Length: 266
Image (cartoon, rainbow, N blue to C red; front, side):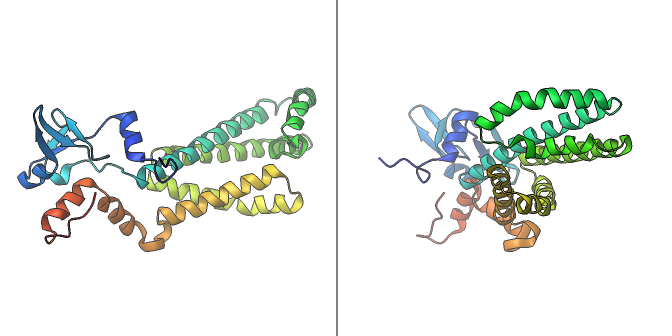
């Protein structure tokens, strides 16, 4: 038995986690295509995985009011978006913590210097084992430079880090909720910092910088291409048409008007 990416059924996985989604259209012919009669009673097809589910449908109404349920590839895309969202959430929280730390110790430069001097050596052995050059890490370099600037500059730095952290959290929320505006914010926000990442790579190449750069570039390309952003591949209209075209309800509706022998497959 072949088990791999091609054999993995995202629809069944989602139904296993969240339950089936059944719906009875008020249109008789369409309702007949989505149901079957068994010895145990009428069963209804799940709009996500296509499995016949016993019991009454979860919803009913005109077909146009049926929920648009993500299926197959759309569920895979949603999973990837939420992985990106988690990464953005983690990065955003760390940046907010850094902004708070800079602000908290802005009035006491000696205290900040003391914390920096005490904790950096403590973390260095662990970082060395992980292959991370802690001294050249972005946040560490930022703090080190901030210690040698005036209070006004340090305040501006804390606001800048705070804004960047807020942007990361905004991207995370949009991606987690699978909102189109979140995809645009993620692409624009990530692309805006690509020149800085290129500059850092030209300054010094480390595996951490290289990996972060590769992930960000891959995320931008994936979002723009798969979500048809900025008018690419037909833009939003083509994206919505693709989503509706994968709907089981739309497939069965098309089957009612399709010529004999050309029934669409769900």
